[in-house]
Image 1: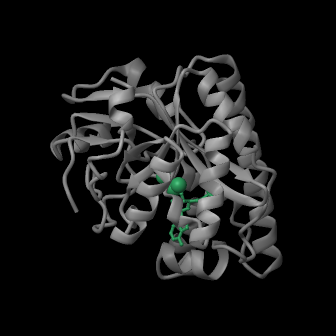
Image 2 (image 1 turned 180 degrees about the vertical axis):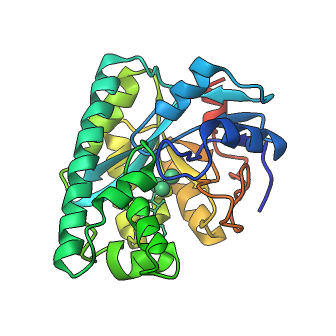
Image 3 (image 1 turned 90 degrees about the horizontal axis):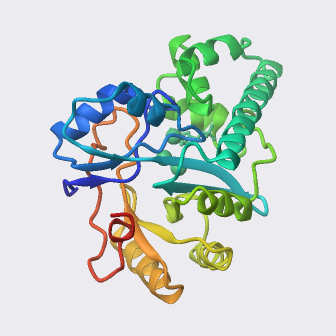
Length: 278
Ligand code: AMP
Ligand code: MN
Ligand code: MN
Ligand code: MN
C-alpha cells in the first residue's frame, strides 16, 4: 500500500484507537505524513487536546471527526473535515453522542450478561480510558479476561452484526449529520462505502441518497478497497459530482496490515477533498 503525505482518517485513544493523540501525530510525521486529520468516532476531544497543548511534530493538522449515523436502518459513518470544533450545534451533537454511546454501552453489557458473560461495563469503560466508548472496548475487555483469543473473535462471537452485543440505538439521521457538518463549515465524506456489507446496488442507492442530501465526497482510498471497488466508486463520484478522499483508518500499531499514511491511491482524475480544504 502506498505511503501518502496526507491522511484524512485516523483514530486515537479519544475513541477506539490505541495511541494517544500526541503519539499518533508524531508517528504520522515519522511515517512521512505532512497533512493529517484526527477523525475519532463521535468525538473531537483528541483534536482539541492537540490544539490546546500544542505539538512538536512537523505536520499540519486539520480538524476532523467520524460521525455515526443511519440511513433508514443502515448504520453509516461520515467523516467531517475542516470543521469548527467550537460550533454550537456540532458541540451539542457530540455531547448527545457521549450520552447515547454510554447508554448503548450499558445495554451491550446487559445483553451480554444475560447471555452468560460477566458484567463487562466497568471493564469496558476502563478500556475506553475516558474516550468515546464503543464495541472495540468490549472486545478488549473480553480479551483481557481471556474470554476470546483476539478482538476479531470478540466481534465474531459477541459484538459483530447480528450478535448479542450489536445493540441498536437511534443513531442520528444521515441528513442531520450532513447539515451539522456544513453548519460547522466542514466537508462531509461518506466513509469506506464498501465496508457496510451492502450489495453494489445498495451502495449506489446509499451514495445517491448521500449526494441528494448534500454530501460532498466519498472515501475512495482506504485499506480494504479493491481495484474493482475503486472503479465503481469513481464512477459514482463522477456521476454525482462529488469529490474523493483517502485515509488509513488507522487504529492500532499492532494491526501490522495498516499504517499511518498507508492506503490505496485515490484515482488522480477525480476531484480531491485535498484541493477543497487548502
Ligand atoms: P462502534 O462505533 O461501537 O459501533 O464500533 C465500531 C468499530 O468497531 C469500528 O470503527 C471498528 O474500529 C471496530 N470493528 C467493527 N467491526 C469489527 C470487526 N469485525 N473486528 C474488529 N473490529 C471491528
Ligand atoms: Mn473504529
Ligand atoms: Mn468507520
Ligand atoms: Mn474510522
